[in-house]
Amino acid sequence: MRQPAAALFLGCLVAALAAFLGPLLDAPAIARWTVQSYDDEGLRAAFALVGVRHLPMFLLAVAAGNAVYRLLKSTSLAMVALSVIPWLVYVIVTGTMESMAVGESPFSWVGYEPSYFIWPHFVAIPLGLYMASRMVRQRQARSALS
Image 1 (tube, rainbow, N blue to C red):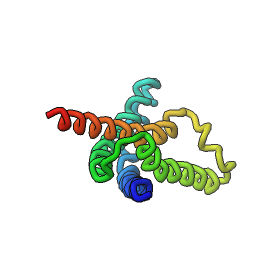
Image 2 (cartoon, rainbow, N blue to C red):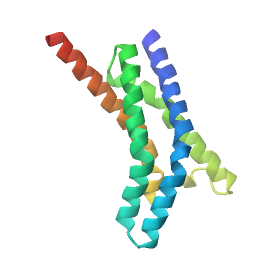
Image 3 (cartoon, rainbow, N blue to C red):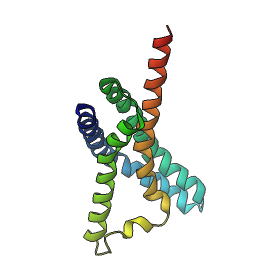
């Protein structure tokens, strides 16, 4: 019972860190995306946005996840899922609130075009935490063999 509660708590800390640092990346990402969009380079615009905004978030999740899973001493998929829940709740709640703030339906953010504006938010942090769990698991396996 202690590990699941700790996974949720540490997941909340990772989500809070990502929620704090993420908006700092928005302005450079949107600026780069705008430059590429004006040049009619749709694919390059997508890569620019994802590279500037979401790649650092992925790397943040890997670094934070390494610390989380070393503390938990468990890298099971259940622990990863529990530590991802706070981030997903944050993304869903903020997306819904922003849609309602501009007078749209609550879940209109799900269909924003282009779709690479919203969907990488769902992937970057969970994938980073999963990759961190695999890294910790491999490190534990290597140390057990030594």
